[in-house]
Length: 280
Image (cartoon, rainbow, N blue to C red; front, side, top):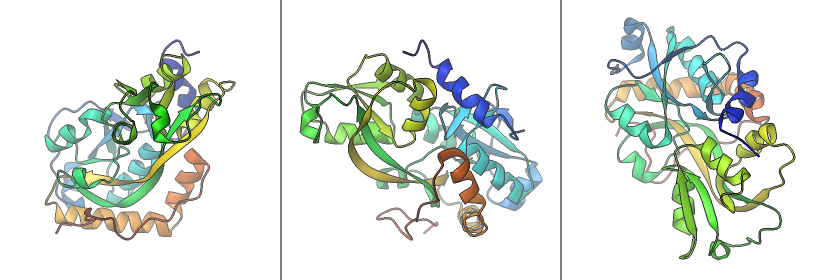
């Protein structure tokens, strides 16, 4: 059983500590560059990244931002020729942080959904995750209707929250937590019967509770994640899309996938319904 979420952070800290000499910021100042040239003139790029969602974004033992998204952001900084400054965001405040110019972009497991595309501008996808439901083997869940009477933990305002809320029947109790780490803690400590998750939760739980028995019960959908910027930033989005194409083609994205997920880079769609990858 987990005593607190620090165990989750520490378990991933040792993995991400090597080679991540990245700066950390906490949202001071304005970040409103429109292009790589402007970012280079500013001398940095400010990226919103999650701090509680390993292996995507978390805080390592040196208090540095680490994980898949941190490494991907570091590649972007290298492409532009500037250091990366991180602003750690929770799931629920990602979009407000972007829209109030506290970051230049979000690289924060931002699922590409039509409702979000009405508020932010997405690039092409750079990663993908499956949104699933986890429970103990003995918990009988074969279809969403089996969730009636069960307590389900989710990270508030996450893709898991959206999918569980959409699919759970009346009589299910959805308990929303501030971040992924506390939702996982609630599941492992027996506060809930099931956990709205993504496929990388298997890695997190294995590191902190290797003897805990659980399994995937349901799969809701596959989520594609894009870099998110403010609407209307046409040149910036074009440059970001060119960067994504470049790191996919030269194998650098594959290296990050293997390092953090132990997986090959998935195939990404050329388009998604009602989600433009460029400024219209």
